[in-house]
Length: 341
Image (tube, rainbow, N blue to C red; front, side, top):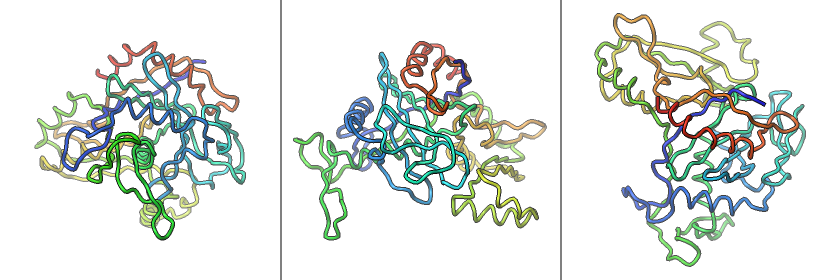
């Protein structure tokens, strides 16, 4: 069936094992690490594919599979969410990689509430593209994906040399290029894939920086996140809408300040702008003197909105990966043109 999708491109800047301060890796590259991840997940249950533990910033993520196309790959992930949202999609952690079992309904013990996310891996181009289907779920979780890959690099036995400490905890002694390679304790895994940006809009904002009169921010705060919940409590108290604290899911807010940023501040705003894939609400923008409209930073993102003919699973929650990667590969040239403006 045809579904609207939002595709956002990322540039894989660093992927592998680096000495401190080095620009080139000692070993490891994007394509090699995709192949190693495919080997590692093969034969595992989905619950065994976790590479990092939940913390204050993010919940756990799992790998549902990596489907190989003709020249590219589709990575499907499951992003865990808090279990207090009523009817929600749930993943069976005992189901096998490549055949995720997802059910809708009230959260049941042993199931993992969350949502699927999709990443088109293009090793030959050094790029990744996230695919969001707004009809099902707007957010993709790029932060979790990056954290997942970094966690894999830190733990995967093909690279990491580990041992148990006196308390029985697993510690990394160093890394090597394969099981037979020499142990190196002065390298560290790095994975960096920032959003690919079109330069025209940002160049105009930089050129007219002195004319900026307002900085505007739109964001969503999640009550389940302790730090964001604290901020929400204060905002609700100021606004006199304390009852809204009980509303489930993210809370949208918008604020603006009268300010002309200096060059360093403007670059920091551009660099730190967080825009979840497929969610048109989250954004940062500026208003120039004499202009009534806001120049949103999201307009500079390498992004394309397209219709894709894909097949869905029984519960309409997870895309059949073969259909998606085939559709993407068939439209690769067109998508690249759209993304780069």
